[in-house]
Structure formats: structure tokens, C-alpha cells
Image (cartoon, rainbow, N blue to C red; front, side, top):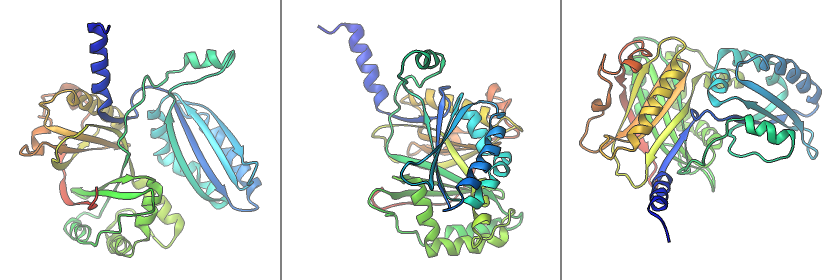
Length: 361
């Protein structure tokens, strides 16, 4: 016979299972997997560049260990795994200018890379391995996903060119949403505030494959070429290294997402939170905690929220219940002391330039 406490526990489990959630802020250890395809004949050059790099990475706060492995089937395929105390210090490093400079020696010997990041949920083993696992912070329970990967890009344009850039970015032919059998573009939302542009994309399947697919589309390439003269950071899309550096710096990762199942469609908006210098990650974590609490409130105006953060750029993409304006969720200046202490100015609603969904999204 099921007791009352068991019934309540089962109800809580069912409620949690309905919430779609991803976050870098649960404090558990992080495993990073980097798949590397090295140019034929450049294996020794790659090894020497890695050995120089790993001594620098070892000094980065939050880094625990790493391993370099070479395929037994194809000597051009390598695997780098690293462990970090948690996701935030890794993201702070991998998105920094220091990282851009640090990995530069690898570029001449590497054909392609693919980075995967995982929280450690469980570990097995005996003896020392068990003792080590006991000291680690592991992810407490599995998160429930919806099969959608969320990512954003951000860059700035020359002051005075904002209206022209908005016109270019708002008028283009949408690319073919189907990338391959497993990958589809679901939604692209583009916003501006002042001279800052934020392009948020939602992909079902392989994010890297989708980004490469979009970059090859002539209508997208034409738009990218058209805005080139207005960018504050120069780039040459015909130069692989120039394009790589630009998009590396423009990456605005999703650090938190929460939504509930079977919610109605709402009004999409983006809120820009100017963080005080060096406090962007703390600001994003505070917003994440607030969104987690709001997800338990059926009266909350926010249906879904994704927080993007890189350095001191923090953007919160939200879907608001129909009939409620997004301005209703903007923090009132002076009303939230913890938030105000992290902000360098008021949070603002960004201007929506375009919001496009695939027909079957």
C-alpha cells in the first residue's frame, strides 16, 4: 500500500519530469571532450603545440586534469578530455581572449574540432577511483531536455549604422530549415539594443552541422557580406582564420534554460542586462535562480527563459504569456538589491528585428 509521503514524492517526481531545464550552475564537475582532426603529417607538430598549451591550461582556476589520446584506427584523429571543478570557470576561460591567443598554435595543424561538455552524473570504479568520486560534486539527478539546442551570437556595429544594419538583417530569405536527416533549424530571433546585435537560434539535432549549413546558404552569405562594412570588429569571410576568430568572439552560449511542458505560445522578447565588469557570470547565475523559482509559480508571466552569457554581456530571451507585455518582467530599478549590485545600468528590452520559425517547429 502506498503511503501519503510516497504519493507526495511520486507527485513531485512527475512535476519535476515535466520541466525542461538545462543549466551550468548546479556546481557539479564538468567533463569536456574535444574531438580533433589533425592534418596528415602534422601529428608531431600537434603534440608539441598541445604540450605547450596544457602547461598553460593547468594554471587556469578551476582546471582539474586533462588527457590526450590518439585513435588506434586513424592517427589523424585525436581526443582531448579535461575535467573542471564546475562549468562556470571553464566557460569563463574558453570564452576569453586569453583562450583565443592560447590555442592559436594549434590552428595550422588542425583540420577540424568538435567540443562537447558534460556534467558528471555518476562514477564507478574501485579503490582510489571510488574515493576520488566521493570527493567530487556530481549532478544530483538527470535533467529533462526537449531535443532543442539553444545558442546565440552577438557583435557590435559602428555607431550611426544601426538603422541600416537592422534593415539588412530584417530582410533576407530564410535558409532551408532541413540540414540533414537528424538536424533542423527551428527558430531564429534577432534583436538589437544600441549598436549591439544578438541573434538567437534554436536547432534540433547537431548545432555545428546547422551553423555550417546556414553559413553556406547564399542568401545568408549575402546578408553577412552586406553588414561587413558596418562591423566594429573587421572580418573577411573568405579568410578561414578571420571568420573563425570573429565567430569565436561572437559566440554567446546558453548558460541556463527552463520551461514547462505544453505551454501556449507567447510573445518573444530579449532583455539586455549590462553587468558590472567581471560580474557577468554572477549576474547570469542570479537570473537563473530567479527563473527556476518562477517556473514553480503558475502565475508567472514567463513561459520560457533562456539566459545567454559571455564575459559581461548577459541576455535573457523570454516567451511571455499572451496578453502580457515583456516590460512587465523588467526589474524595477532599486527594487531588487542583489540584482542592482551586479548591474552597470538598467536592464532594457531589446528591439526585435526578426523572429522566424520553421513551418514544422
